Length: 371
Figure 1: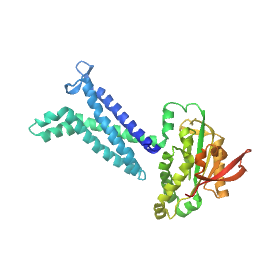
Figure 2: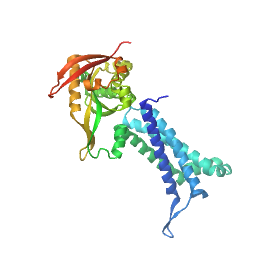
Figure 3: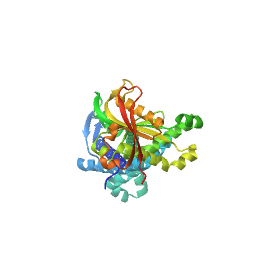
Figure 4: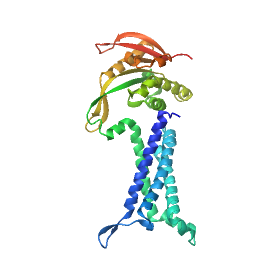
């Protein structure tokens, strides 16, 4: 069974969270074994609970492995999905309450199973002894506080991950953008139609909320089309794809547009009830070489630079002129596999000299054929 790109991204996130928690658990195991002896002014490596270090390390990894996988799955697949439209503080509060409950559960179960089960069972007051050992002891409190900090880092890391595209974030860590380099990319510029009129009618705050909902509803179609969001510019979104076999084979950029269209149509009742309209949009897709690298000194950003960006912007202007919702360039048309062309209705709009350019470009309107 082939997983959708969005599911693969989410599973990659869960795996990353799990590995981070395992690494944190291993580090904490080493940390707990290092003890300072004031009388001799020395650090002594001593494993707690009279265990071998390997067993102690394994115990400190099992909990984070289970916690990272289950907690990460709930965070990625449920909390982030369902709280996407809520306020930041509401999002943080729900996540904090979830993790404090989840961590308390893990930090009582794991020590009970591996350390204190017999001691609690043989105590005169088992419940009191269990609370003293598992909840109120300095060791337990320190453990809970430490893992809450790790959970907070996890949530913030997820926020950073969502701010940058996955490949961009990895490339930043590997230093690929430290020096500019030329890459081949497909770009889509997608713009909300009649935005000025809508903004005047709704007011600035409600119009901003409309844009938030509009862009949010695009997220799944973009991920499922292997696309990555470059930037938001007012009421416009810029999406890009690497020119690779999987993208070309399924013609993901064009498929992305119609997936977004379907997503907005499925939410039409919500938009009508909330804003009194269903947003319409237009887009242009073009392919070419761009230079990518880090730009800026104080606030650094990953920036694409090249003629393709200007050309795609000019192509989108033609949508209004030719009454087309999607326009592609001849460079994009040449990439479409022959078996895919029958799926689309292609209208040649002519060879046009675009504003600000000396060369001409063949433009094509694209729509889905009626089934």
